[in-house]
Length: 160
Image (cartoon, rainbow, N blue to C red; front, side, top):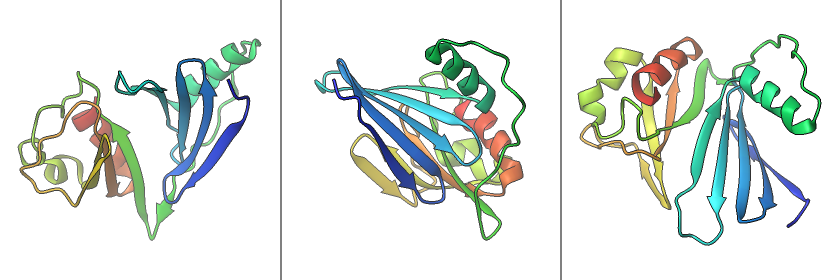
């Protein structure tokens, strides 16, 4: 097991930190919005990556537990990454996500959330500018663009 933490800049999204652990790789993506996505990838390739999404507060509490010193975190100001007034972010769909198994058109993503799906990362494949007929699947990482104020509505409507 390597103690080396690898850091990668994700332009317009945030940063990814990865560490090799026994039986897999643990990666944490810290979005500019403060949300954290945690990925556990099985290095044997037998299982798809496990994904958990934490709010900024949840991530800080878990970090305190992992560090061995649980404490009530101080409130932090969420900073949203905007490019020309637009937020670029992504969410990962779980099996119980409202959008899993439904097409972009069926979900009426733009009409209901005012966000636009610009790409879908599905395993090793990338669907750039998906058609409205594209059916979202559990495990999809959906890259979205829109106004920062509309992100929460998209997460509720599509990711759950």
